[in-house]
Length: 351
Length: 239
Image (cartoon, rainbow over all chains, first blue to last red; front, side):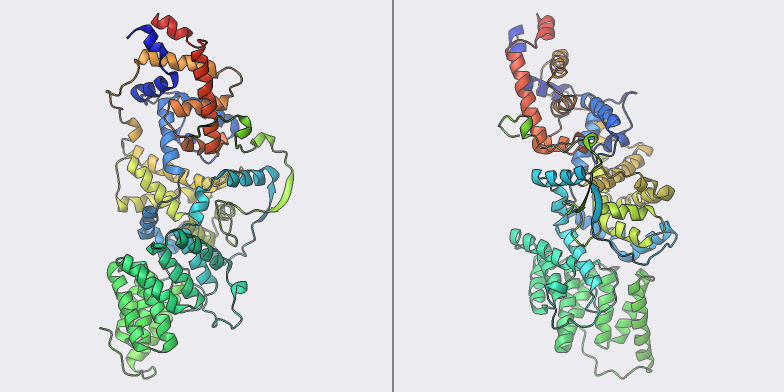
């Protein structure tokens, strides 16, 4: 190869090829702390220091690689698989979260503080920046906020704010049971979280009509709206698409139970109990499944099963608002078992 | 990358912090990356958690941030070749302990600077740092340390290094800004994509803005080499 060939090629291509061949990440004494480098991502470094870090990292193969990996790992919202992983983890369970929080806060204040609207004094440039980024397509987190995991939380929040059934929804915190839906019930008095969730579900279902996650969320929303038959149809479909999903079984059992209560249908109650049992077989320590199955058993006058389930429930959650309810139900069950409660009608079969 | 050449007027930039005048406006802020209306802002939640006595705020924090923390822990663990669910739970707990340590010092250090999604990014960075610290303390080998293959075709190293210096000389001259020079090297030397570079909030550019810078500097470099303005060192070395 002569000199002309060597310098005559496209400089950009030679630059790129050389980087692939000769980049050698090696940490030096001049390299900054990697934790500081990563803070460039959320813009948490003062401008002067940021300038120094960026200049160094642009030319240092080690720090450049640290930033490249951080940008790959930390700039994207959770994937579906990661949301699923989070749903199976230790902190997905509200009871265990509460216990952990009590440990780190020393059992601090738990009374709800009024949530102020997002109405704050913001520097003018902050508002402009947000608007610009919306226009420019900085929507990763918006996508996340519209995704199934966040929508599930919105539904759980709506449930807690206006709890209208004794059964639990996945991930929902305890809330006081309110009276039946009024005749004037309309979108005007629906919790905002429910309206937001419905809007997400509409968007998600339109884009992915056969996605069991969106079908499940649609079923939950219909359940919260009192449209039990529609909810059952959607949840049956979600269950058919994802038969080993315990949270779909939880919702399906709940929808069947709600219909059973409305129609006073013991067969439907038994079906609901069966769905909860399938869920418990998949996730034996799932607090919501244990709670709902215990309640279904109790309403079926299957007091021995109900007692065992309430006991099992209280082993996984002994301190939440749900646990207080579980204690009350368990007391009733014990009275009935000891003969001091009201005489139940003939017990239907539970298979 | 977009094929069109984009000048400064095409860039989508966030206003630099130093240009903030301190003018205040009362606005109902619809935060695009964060909560739905009716839900508390993530910045507000962090402030509430900084009061370590507020257990309810902490429960909300765990409920809201757990998916992104778990995702970050899992992704960072994979960098060390690990994928164990049990270890992941322990590390997630370590992350929460980090947030609550020293009366939530880490949360108190968060500065809202107007970057969209900054709270989520901050939580993810702290979570990643906890995992890196964990593996470093155990002597774990990070993928950054893995050697590159030796047989990648390319110019000789000495020639490449001269080319780097030649181009850098060009990029240090006006009208190229320091930031644009950084972007060029992140792209061509460090192998970052435009999207990855735009993820560095401190650069205050969107992906399109980064692409625009790269297209412009590409043209500058090629044109300088074509006109022979930028081959001094290479000529001396090779000739």
